[in-house]
Amino acid sequence: MEQASQKRIVPVNRLVLGITGGIAAYKAAELLRLLIKQGMEVQVVMTEAACHFITPATMQGLSGKPVFTDQWDASMPNSMAHINLSRAADAIVIAPATADFIARLANGLANDLLSTLCLARNCPLLIAPAMNREMWLNAATQRNVAQLLADGVQVLGPDNGVQACGEEGMGRMLEAGQLAQDIAAFFQPKQLSGKKILITAGPTYEAIDAVRGITNRSSGKMGYAIAQAALELGAEVTLVSGPTALAKPHGAQCVDVQSAAQMFDAVKQHVDSCDIFIAVAAVADYRVAQPDAQKIKKSANNLTLELVPNPDILAYVANLSHPPFCVGFAAESENLAEYAEQKRRAKKLPLLVGNLAQHAIGSDDNELVLFDDSGSHMLPRAGKFTLARQLLQYIAQRYEGAGK
Ligand code: C5P
Image (tube, rainbow, N blue to C red; front, side):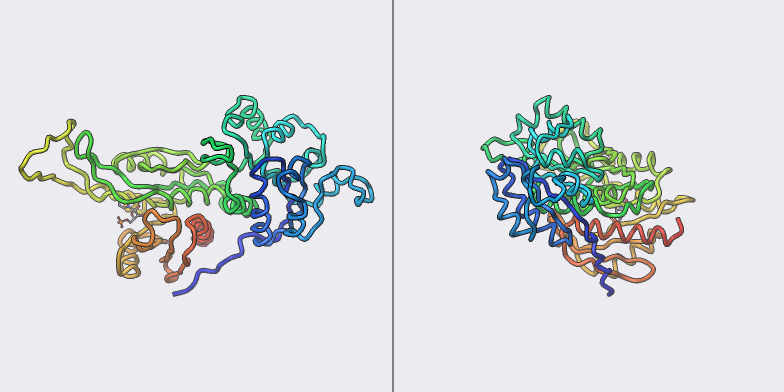
């Protein structure tokens, strides 16, 4: 079995990491470390308020470069720190970005070094908001963020959860690992730009009666990660999802369904215009022939349900007269190679992704084996996002190779 080439995702890129004055500034140290680990060259710039939360000495120690905090830094021979620093960067990342700093950015204010170099930039700007939930929900902040999005600024997060102040809600800065991934993704070539990708994800739910149903164990995490990875490569993504507890990937067109029949209808509606179809959903193989509209009353007798097979959505798409490039998933509990390759041939798929169900269900990481005409290729154990990125790059290459 061949190990799929572990391409380095991120070439060396030059970043300005701007830190503003919020408690989440402590996470900026870990973020800096991860960015450097990914091969980036990082110049740290801090606001005065940020220096109350974390010291420039820490950031200098981690980045190996002096940290700039002052517009009037005498070490800049031309006294133009804002121009010099922004011209030397491929992108500026502000993490954390406080409500105040976001307001200043949205209004084009330039009253310290960091805001001035943002205004003077000719490179992309990414911000990671971090603030109390009421500050985040405040109409002024929402207006400012909407303005920044309209101005082409990338907004990463915020996250939902417990906050430093003890309250709970939206406003937490994304964790350093997630931010490092999002920043790396930003620099990825948009290999699937202009391509339409249709993805099924999650389980399906087949009603038995008004309150009971049959379903599969599937969190939807892999399918959602694949949708996210496809968006990062510039694709236009439609995500048809069975019931999950996951947040929708920002930028995808999402269609929520319950049953396999509904998933089939949604796929038929969107498949005509798509270039690539990735069937990640754990579709129930059977549904109840005649679900009861009312709750079935419990009795001492045995209950027999008549089950009828559901349509095979992937097989239907793969057998269209002009099918998109079709990718299937197979979760097996044993004999992965044998069963997966059999499935690939039976469904006439150019690519099938196999995994062991016991390694995958509900977990945040997994390992995948890709089966195609050239043999089998291993994607070793990693987080589902990392795997999704590697898989999408593989799909993009195969799609191009197929002359689609
Ligand atoms: O269930 P099975 O192992 O056959 O699933 C293999 C692939 O077929 C998966 O990609 C799954 O999403 C897809 N499938 C489907 N419709 C079904 C059953 C499976 O699209 N009814």
